[in-house]
Image (cartoon, rainbow, N blue to C red; front, side):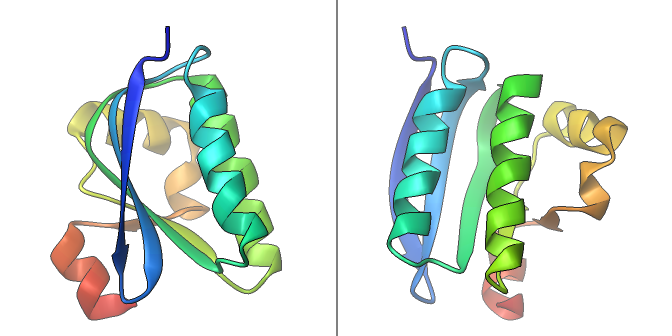
Length: 113
């Protein structure tokens, strides 16, 4: 059973994935497929609203890292925002806060990109 729900919106023409639930081994492929779809359409900036992500596993982190690498190679970035403290801590422990662009909230995203 897939443990996430993904809604999509746009901010300044850039795709925003609003992810809800757990990003774990069972659901990481679902998120990866959605991200790949935007990469195939030529997106250079992809944003993920993390406010409703309850858990992020190493499988989920691999998806985020590989997507970020592909976007950076194309001159863009993967941006995460509104991280719950538990998810922020996982990203920090892994050292990803130095690799992936992290915004405080949607307001900062709109002001920055």
